Image 1 (cartoon, helix red, strand yellow):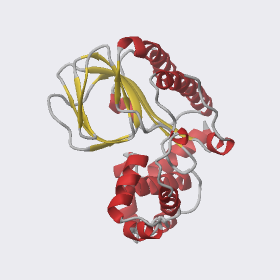
Image 2 (cartoon, one colour; image 1 turned 60 degrees about the vertical axis):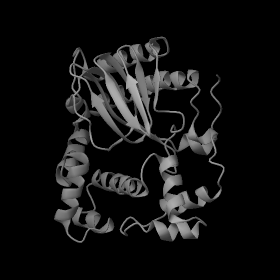
Image 3 (cartoon, helix red, strand yellow; image 1 turned 90 degrees about the vertical axis):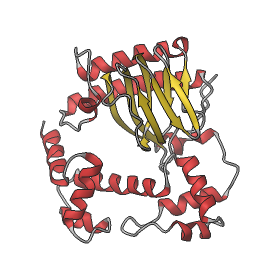
Image 4 (spheres, one colour; image 1 turned 120 degrees about the vertical axis):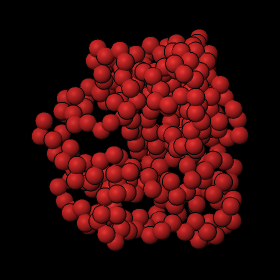
Length: 293
């Protein structure tokens, strides 16, 4: 299957965020998780067993198989001794839509997964050096890096992403840009959601009505298209704004908090730390270290 051309406005506005690459044991076994929000990603099962409950389906991934995850919510269960090779990422269009959403949450056999498995081991070496085992906690922790190291990691992830794209093409998964929901009201809904003020509580019923939809229909369409609830997507926008503002020496943290609707800076600090594991001050300091390296 050939790679269809994307409009200039779409590929120019793609936003990437590389979240982790790890190879190691899973943190919790023999227990179903609650409903969790996950990004796009891929994992290979070295040993053990993985069960995933998503969109009303129960999926089992066995050793030698891999799983292509859609961004969204799911529950998961790991057998004792399960070890994964995994990559997590966000790839969004300029409107904040996942580049890939439909057709994911699928299992692939060894023959279809082997090229991507090899590419992921190459990525693992580029990011973590000679370490053969890296836990999820280690791989996902925010760390300071020099600009040279950042460039090396960025290049390695982009090369891996090319292998990921080729695997998706072989499996028949298309980009969001090449699929249509068949409902033009969704475009109006997405535009209204993208323009909603970050300092105001999201009023989905209001923007749904303006888009010609009922609230329940709007919620279902957005979850199917975004892989997240409307509120989770709004929270993602707010976090992106906060991180972008904190990467600069100004404005003060109190002003960032106010711009996001927090009346008191400590409330913003608690919210930001839950989302990133760092306080706003620590996040800003880490960016200064990176810039000075």
